[in-house]
Image (cartoon, rainbow, N blue to C red; front, side):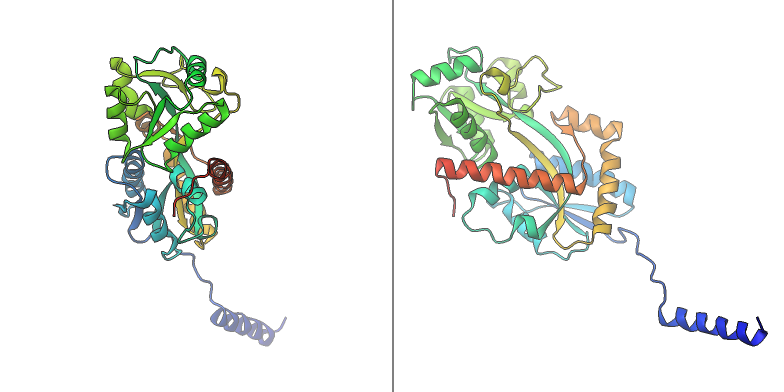
Length: 324
């Protein structure tokens, strides 16, 4: 090859590089990230968000700011994320409530499956099925038998119409073939107060909510609602093994981003969350709160969301529930 030919090749390469420069991929994140929670401070979703916010801030070197956008069973926060710039800098603590909303609400201001992108699950926890100690039952089978002899007389509390606790108990009602009456409250606190005082006979609640009442004997816990027994309460049977085969309902949290967030950004956030959720101190923090840390791929989380939306949507139609 002559020196003239070498010169021409070098010149062509230089011109090509100038015309098509290599664009370096920006590291994520390079600025603060907002993490929206659809409920008031102090609840399970808020606590999960603040745990993750603390560890993500330390590992990313950028502030993760937890914002509470309470209202409409989490829909206010979800809508804000659905309408945010799809760049990964606005995230949501996506919960079981969000899948319930998609099945219960006649009109949604956004499409959950289209406008929100799943990142990973974070934690999962069963509910506990509890009764007032005065109710003459020792286990779930006896509760079902009693309810069948008293149709429309036993009352169960929930944190509100269309809430996961309401639908989880309605699912039990339907699968067990009983007719217990739903009494909705404005939050789990008032519902538990009336259960403890004996105004209501039955309620489901999280381990964290029931813990002190269960230990003091003011609530008799019969079973857990998960597919498997709880690691914290291994002696408690599941509802499925207590006379209602196939029953399963859990409360859970995850992380979602705006729907059109680039897959590379979703993957980067997922990678870091999976790493953090495997840390012993993070696992211990969640377990102490009665919740099991559980990460997943975005695809697996997306499938879970679809299954839950379908599950609750079918139940809502079956019981004729609709909230406009």
